[in-house]
Length: 405
Image (spheres, rainbow, N blue to C red):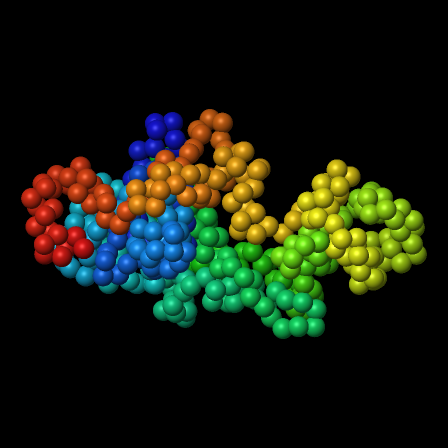
């Protein structure tokens, strides 16, 4: 493991839910030792929500947790107890990075704020991934991904023509914040390697989501108007839509045409070459003006064909097309499986299950998912013995008093 990018880096992980664990999972993928701090009194919500393996509930059987905590270790610490805070501070001496995604001020209230931690280890890097940042009028607001989507303008810009705002269907600000957080931590580690200085990172989930809304922000800044909700359509390209394919209600195929050669190629593939010269569709601007009629023509073709048949025919002609994939489609996808993106490691309680793996490959420092998600608290004794020299008898006593719970 010495050739991994973050080999030798140790992360003390106080995160929970999605954004924080997604961040620290990237660090684990890069080779860091990530030690997740958990408590039975305040269990991670992702250990308690379905889907569960074989529909049997249990803290080690939750697919959500087991997906986003691959490659980590787990220790138990009840941070409501002063003795647990003392142990956490001792662990900081052996850590390079401390990460949490609690609300603003929580770590300070616990006695684990940045000023305290850098007094313990001067070059520590601390990342706090709160919903709205550690300052400002919203700092005390509860932060989850869906409200961050609304606050960032994502819902306002999502929907169909003439309709109201709509949800985007996934808590996208969570994993987005996780990726931003991992990048910021790697940058801070690089800075420390060059200067010897630690760093405090105040990350707002809201602000990392607003970054994804440049079109809406620029439309208002440049033209003082809100962008129009327009379903799956594009401001310039036509056709640009998700079309019904043959089969049940879940079978669809997306098609996007971005140039005149692509438009002519599509007309050939659908068996209507004369359509390229139709006065309604001769230019991109005309196709936008007559988009409803154009979509009806394309739907009449796609709705009688298998989505993959449509995809392969158009792709062969140089036209962007792909089916709308279900979860089952993704799990069974030949491309993702051949590239090794889907991993199946042996979990001690639920056995082998397919999980999304690492979405990058690096020739100089190849990475791999090194272990499945940990059983809750499975590494408590090993970590405390190795890093703090605590004996087995002391661990047992700490368990009896509820410190390691």
